Length: 268
Image (cartoon, rainbow, N blue to C red; front, side, top):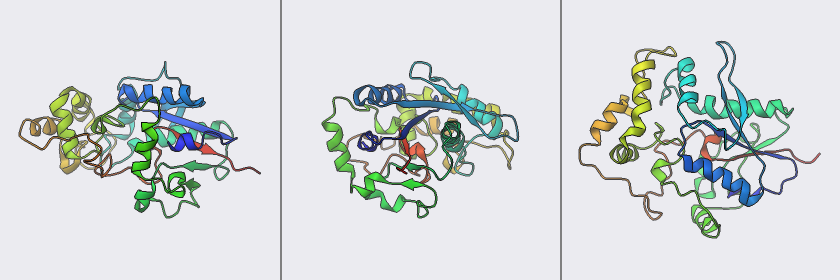
């Protein structure tokens, strides 16, 4: 909705950073936004650089975007398994590729603003240093709340159509335990990659001890085992569970909160 609101800005870049771990319907949705609204969306992906150099980007398309685990594994090989204590996955898979792209087109830091998709009913998530960091919150400025977002999409000819507990990266460690257990009950195979990484790269990236993905030091195997016991299944109904998509949100300056990241320059 925010991207739609900003679609007529004259000098803008709309960027989607693909991680390879999104539900494929998310990719279809981003492409549909471009087609339906006439948007020029730049698709970028991580390019891991040798030790001592930061990650960069490559440009892909809806057709060529990675739809497997290779991007995520390359990130883990260098930086280790991400989790609550090592939350580098968003930085490496989204922020750095986006920033690398912006630099590649000659936009200097401080010459543009980045729109963040936080609503007026989420004001507590606004970065207090947003002016200095070149951020803005169009939905807050327009006093858009969750009900307004629902009303907007009710009028569109398409929607994301991804259940809330499968949104963003399907098995993302930031999701609540109830969402993880529901995923494990429905499609336990989505945790196969996490399980493989914990076995293969638990000691990669440095730090103390063997790393695992999930809160309370739970492994992917632990999630699968817990899902075999009775629990309250996540219900994807608008009137329920409206406390947000994750138990712990991404940082308030973090483009992973939305599919499309609009950036634009102010008129001189």
